[in-house]
Length: 259
Image (cartoon, rainbow, N blue to C red; front, top):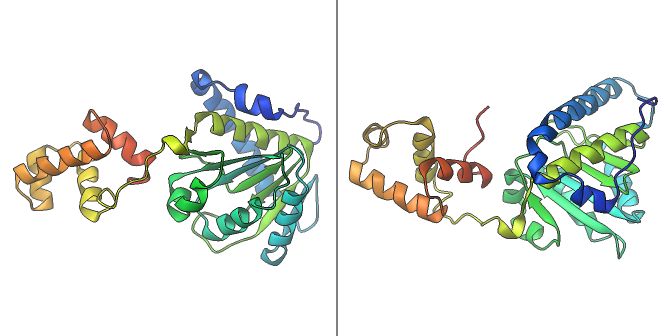
């Protein structure tokens, strides 16, 4: 990777260089870049030493290293959160230590928003996107902190990346994801009703494409009751169609995205 050269995007370029209208073309580039990072992480997981600007660390030194990177920021701290409670707690606790004048951006997926909604809503620049990034913190475009554990595991191992090409790739990945994210202030907080088990089951029926009669029978409710629930759910989601209701349910983390 040392032979690859990238120009690090500035903070302004990070915000403006990837317009939303280019999302389709950007998607392929992001997938290629993500594959590059995943292959790099996979390679260095098997090597105990520091190689090509990737340093591995155990859980006990993770917090100290993260704090040092964040405190040393001069221009920007860009964060991607995926819902890992331990990683989120470590990152959010240290964001308050970012020096004055440093731009902080936090990109979270619905799972992360569900873990710490109040703390995320207190931050100035947060966007929501069902992204595929691992937990990362990119500081000044020169260093990156990566969570290596798989989602849902208790593995808190991490790596610090200082290789210019690798950090540039992570910065590009983040820029693309950030450009497609929805501002948290525009992202409604689901009501308790929308988080109920009945609502989830109804949304699953809608996504499956079953007829109202079949869905009502499966849920053991009358057809009239089923349709009333559907109308109420669509109203709370501010959806004009059942398809739109499904899309918004995924955005809010009420349904898992199908692949």
